[in-house]
Length: 344
Image 1 (tube, rainbow, N blue to C red):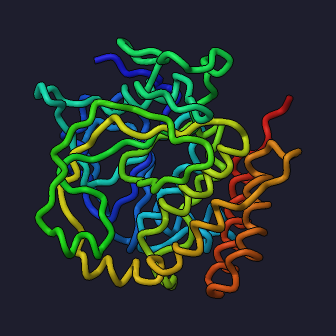
Image 2 (image 1 turned 90 degrees about the horizontal axis):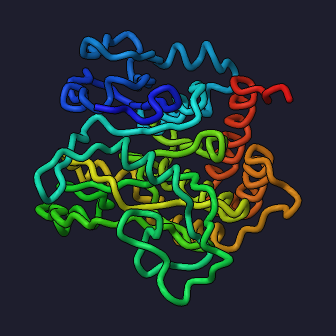
């Protein structure tokens, strides 16, 4: 099986358990380098199946590498995955949860998620004008009548957001009222999220161009010692979308699907999400209205600017947001430390 961009893509997996789920992914993942971010007790030994090329980081490694900035990486939460984004040296990242397995398309064929994500990332996005046949660059589709020719070249794609069959990514209240709901609809479509529109980005099956947007892919402060959880990927999604819109680059959503095998406990989830459910009613308008310096084109600089706006614009909701803004700045300091600018 051909492995597209095998030397240019890292697979990042956050986990607290043995990675037996990789056996099912072996035909697809084995050619790639894995970065495993072990959460929880660093003394616990995690088993990785034979034959995978991987590096594994636990909390002790994070503290050793980042020193006084390590506090910005969440503990006891899958948000710790963003440490893997920071230490990677590749152009592209694919991140997946360890309860996601290979899905099948309607014909019964196993879905090669990396092949589709890479296709999404390597073809342009169309954020400025919606194409009613969805992705105009795929085989058998094109731009429809009335689509401006001046916009048909599209723009670079920063993010490819994949979906899930079986257990949908619902919040706790929806899980509680629909405990038996399963997503069985395979929608054969990829679309660009329009400019000016936010979307709920899930980190379960996500690929992105690390060089284009990696420095903004911070999964916030969640888990132990924080008043909120399960908003790590949402936070990264809002921040990256605002910066992508500012830079005129694109985010896609749709194919590929993974099979999400188990629902997390809705009562545990409600405890984690409770404040976020209220807070997001103010957070979303903040992101919808935030503006960034027109002259700025560096993702790192834009992210630091966004951190300052978070502090001023959301700090009144709860002291947590000032701490989160500090975390955003510490994240960029860590990013710059591990990713110094390339010599011209």
